[in-house]
Image (cartoon, rainbow, N blue to C red; front, top):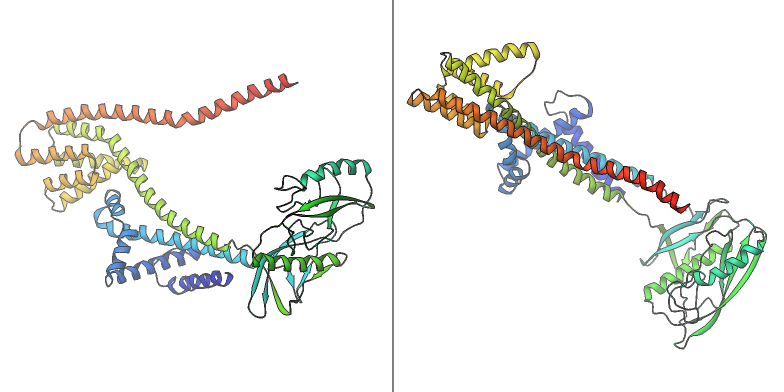
Length: 493
């Protein structure tokens, strides 16, 4: 798999190097290459979508989503809409490429970081004194192409001699016979694999095992090559307890019954017996020589390693897709904040319109007065407000020749909220039909707007209280623990 990860990495790097110089990004370093590559890829996809219906549908569905464009219409001016959607899509592709690159780099790093245990001439180095045993997963490749395994083999550390502890030995022997049962109910009827522990918790002994008949039972507790008769066969297990110079033997009689195994399992048992036999003969040496032949066939040994690189690569791809979803959520959140700001400012806008029109200004004059006052205030404070920016945009539209009715109608549509659409409809209706009822209708709208503002404030307060509910419950639990734990400890004492 490492070759696949390296291949993907090479393709990504070549893409960044070849396409990263073709874009128009003003950024620097890796970010510039990512931006340019994402931009070029998107342009290529757009070109291909013009020629292929499937690609066109895919690009429209997953890149230029209708929802994205609909949200963007409220966040950016109309003349900048296409550019904003394109830029947003480039950012999604950029983040996908970045996460894919990082995930692949991590997969390659993990792949190269795995050092196999098999050295030249089929040698496995032992751990030094006190480093513990090593469990290695192997597979045997014979010259005829047969692959046997995976086979789990334990390569023991270099061992010290042992020392006697009689009292602990007597206690350990009592516990041992229950420990070795495994799934068996009794040692008089062994039908499942026995558990041969190498040690017993809270005891210092290293325990090794011997069987009176290795053809029936292996030293690891698994069944041997020869099947026991249906009526069972009695054999003896010998447990050797060692601790420094101490050495004691415990013989345990058992009765073993047949176990059904497949031909493949038998081959694995034979290979494992061969490995364990060679391994147990040279435990005082620093290296363990793996056998080169089995039943007249040459063996090529390879260590079976767990490969997490593919999982990391898949997670990187999923993360890249999730980033795309997160980008869409950012747009939705931005739209919600925009709408909340518009709702907060609506009573102020309607009251100003009522005030200025009541003072004798026309609708256009009132809009221009509101826009001029906002620009003066913005120069002082630097604070931008969406609805006032829309009013300035509407004033510019009227100054450049757009009819007042059309400009006010577009103002309501750009705001995109029902109250602004209603207000713009009142203004357009007054311009087309005339009449003296506009001020009265606007005064009603002011009263309704302030009432809605109070309701929204109460709603936001309730939402804030709901969000604080979980932290308050968590604090309550902490307080209860602080009170109850000492009380229970006191009762126990």
